[in-house]
Image (cartoon, rainbow, N blue to C red; front, side, top):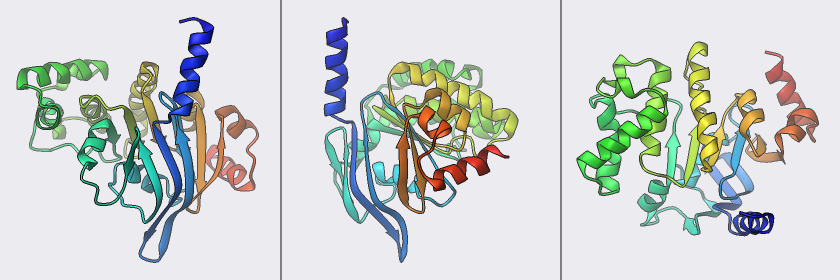
Length: 259
């Protein structure tokens, strides 16, 4: 691809964002969890969302596939408006993979069965094709030898890599990560982050809520800083870590990096 074609492709992705959020608001009873959130994510972009606990980060990404339902504003995912009660929500969820803090694997199923159940039920794959796909992604996250064990037989880091492989088996257009390392022991974190870093080379759109600032520096195209239910700053990693614009971001970084 020559320079002109490359620039045109980039302009096309930017003109047709894969995620577009406008005026998003979310309450839990009287508690405001999200207020006037505006964010656009382009195809292939890597966005890291950070901020203090309780700032609304996880709620924001859970609204993208309606695990949480918003009250005001609009969410567009791959050209489709995502809204409470929509009939096509399963179509959205097929295209939006999510990895949670707590793995959410089925404990009564072996690892390979955890990976094949989605493609068989929701993508119409045969059992044989689903198993081939599962092994492909288990190899990708460097855990293929654990395919026929149960989740309880794996370490936390291994379970999280299984969860990542399970999400990838659905061939999503977007991957959401909700604090994927927060439940792990320190020695297990690097293995999961290494897998995530490798995935960024595939060109997949990724939105990650995390406190792992080294990961943010390494892979993010943009850093979104949230505090008190609002987006306070959106910057490149260099701008955010070297010259944050607001006192709230400066305080957050000084507290985080001092530990």
